[in-house]
Image 1 (cartoon, rainbow, N blue to C red):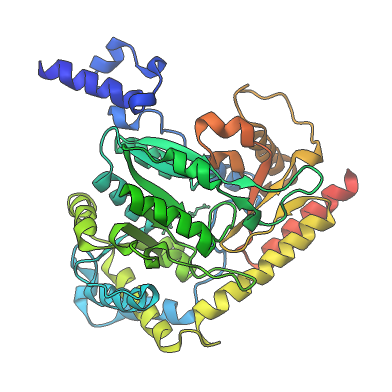
Image 2 (cartoon, rainbow, N blue to C red):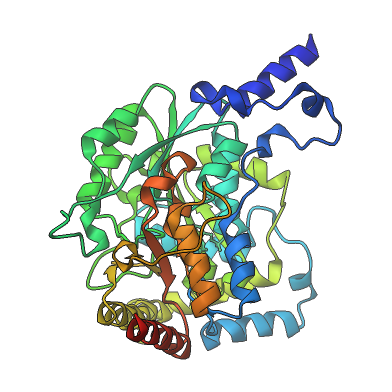
Length: 453
Ligand code: IK2
C-alpha cells in the first residue's frame, strides 16, 4: 500500500503536476533501482551557468557572460571584512544566530523599514540566506506544495523554474512581449510589457504565488508603478503571494525609480522581498542574501533554513552589516556607494550600447540591472550544423562566438521555459558590469568582426 502511494505520487511529480507529460515516466527498472536519483531532481539537471562559464574559461574568452563584476567591491566594505576576520573578536569565526547575525538583521530592518514605510521586526520578519539563491529556494520549498501553481514572468532568471519543480509545484508562464513592430522594433526594456488580461487569465484557484523580478534579469526592465499595481491588485484579489526578487534594486538608470511591490497597498502582508549583498556591494562571492516579509510567512522560510543551511558565514554577515551602517549614514549623498554604483554602471551600459549600435547590432537598452540583450537575427551568421537538432539557434550562436571570436555571452532562450525556448532564440545577453579594459576588449572583437563581414 505504502509503495503504491509513493510510486503514484512520484509519477505525478514527474509529470510536472496536473498538466504534465506522461512520456516522462521512467521505466520500472529505473524507478526501483537504489541508484536512481530522487524524482524531484529529474529534468532539472542542465544549468546554463555551468555550461557557459566552463566554456568561457576553456577558450579564455572576453567574458560578458555571467553576471559578476570583475572589479573590486568598494574599499570600506573590503576593509570591514578584513577588520572582522583579523580582529580580536573570536566569535566572528563561530556560529551565529541561525536566521541572521544580529547586527545585520538590525540594520536591514532599519534600512528596509525606511524604504517600505513599514515597521520591520529584525528577529521575526527577516531571514539572512546564502545569497538570494537560498532565499528563493527557501521561499519555494516553504510555500509551494505539490500541485500548486506558480506564475512566472518570461523571460525569467533561470533558477525559478527548477526550484518550483523541486518543490512539487507547477509553473505557469506569462510573457513580457516587446511592443514594437518589424518596422519600428522595441528599443528599450521598458517597451517589453505584460498584457494585463493575459496576466489575469493565469490566476486560478490553484495559484499560490507569482514571481516578480525588478530590475529584471535578463531584460533590464524596471517595472513602473502602474505595472506593479496591476500585479498587486491581482495578488490581493486572489490571495496570492508575491515572491519579489529585487537583487538589482540599487541599479536603475536614466531617472527610473525602483519601486518595491511590498510598499503598495495591501502588499506587505503577502510579499516576500528578496535582496543580495553580492549585487548591492559588488561582492557576489560573499553569498549573503535575505528574504523580508511578515513573520506569518517568513517563519516558514526559517523552518526550511534551520533544517538545511542553518546560517550564513558570520564574518561575511558582519562585514555586510558594517557596509550598510556606513551607507545609512550617507544615503542619497554623492559619497554613498549606492549613489555612485548606478552612475558608474550607466556609463558602462552606454559604452556597450554605443559600440553595439556602431557595428549594426540592435541592443534593447536596459533601464537597470547588470545586463542588456541584443538581437542577433539580422546578423545572418551561418552556423555549423548542430550536433543536437534540438539546440536553439542562440545557444549555437553563443558557442560559436566563444570559439571563433573569443567573446562569451549568454543565450537568452536559457531564460525561457523549455516549451518556449525555440520561439525566443534570436537574442544573446551581455553583462556590462565589467572593467573598462574588458569592455574595450569586447569592442575590439566586435569592431574587427564587423570590418570582416
Ligand atoms: N536573482 C537574480 C535575478 C539574479 O540575477 C541573481 C544572480 N544571478 O546572476 C547570475 C547571472 O544572471 O549571470 C540571483 C537572484 C542570485 O543572487 P545571489 O548571487 O545573491 O545568490
